[in-house]
Amino acid sequence: GTDGSVFGCYGTPSFGMGAVGWNYGTYTWHTNRDTYDKIVMDDLKHNATLAAMMVYLASEDPDFIKRDKSPGTWPANWPQNCVGAPRKTKPRY
Image (tube, rainbow, N blue to C red; front, side, top):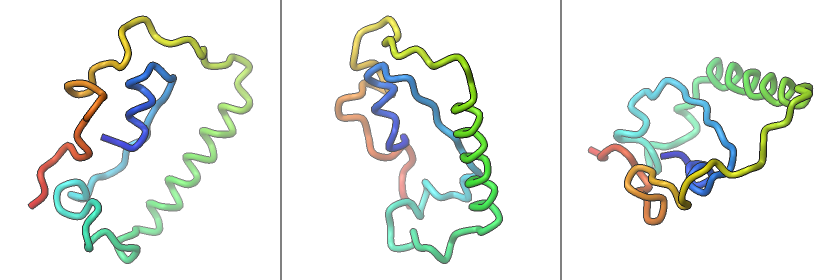
């Protein structure tokens, strides 16, 4: 999962944004292949623009996200449970 998955596990309002994987999680993630030369600048510009737009829209929204925890028992299950959740979701090759 993502680094922010733990927030959802404890009932904190959260969301995530995804991207084209390019097999990143399969053989690149947190290895010596995970280097800056793999950055696709057009994708980076697009993602930065999208993130800036989301922040702007959130700042202008008159309705705030509720800060109440969702009903349930915490920590919630993700994927088996949040405590000791795996750091990766795909096997490395």
